[in-house]
Image (cartoon, rainbow, N blue to C red; front, side, top):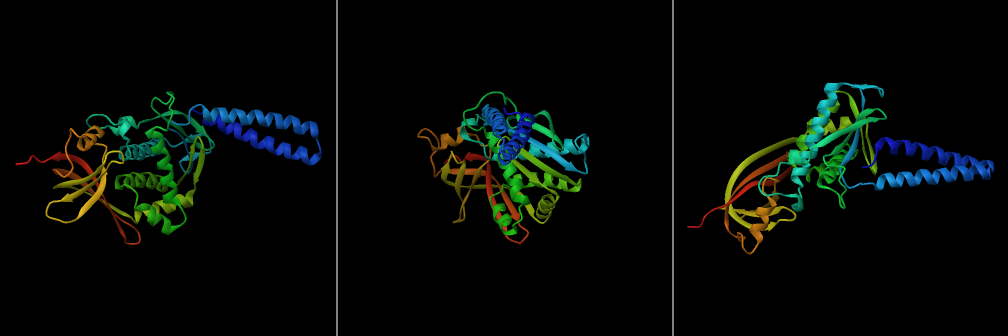
Length: 316
């Protein structure tokens, strides 16, 4: 894993050396320029080596500023504990909703366990924490699901805080209602405590100032999210185990709804439905479904469907 503190130090050195190289050029100092350039090459190689140790697993530095923070010295313990709890909830919810088949297990997936983050160290630059996923020291050839969830979380931060109101309204359509609720708790906590945030990934740095936090809080406050659990009997007419999506025709209606399976429906079960030996598409099922309704600030509504349980109805 990359070391954020070492990376920050190397970045400062790189900026200073680049300035010295420019000054030496302007002064015609050939020897000085060569020395600075040599050191700059060494620093650049050290940065590249640090990034390439393993940039596929989840790691983020969350740095807070504002009322709960006293410079780089202290942070209010209650604020920090709650902020980290809300952030973990966002990552866990995203992990659960985006779980890939290759990580699924038989039975119910306990996303809260698989997506848990550990505090590795204190982050400086204001005051914050470096978080990493469990078993982060194990190398990974591809990005882990937790890493992808972490990246998606910070991307959603950008969507909530962006300046363009119309773009925000469009982005909400793709948000899982449970994820939106988790985001709401996090940004409400930041706003009510007068805090701002920096989120640093190994390859990207994001700043969410007070104005951005206030925009996110306003948008969240003006958006109504409702999740209604229902149980329907109908026909499963389409299924993609890889994308974890379904098409379902409810008995007594002509409408075919499309949605996603939650992590609670195991990948093993989905694959059996499509396999030659498993349950055939077109069979009758009793489906437990969560209908998520998001009423946006402009009055428009976004509706999503998530299956949390699926049982075949025995034929007579």
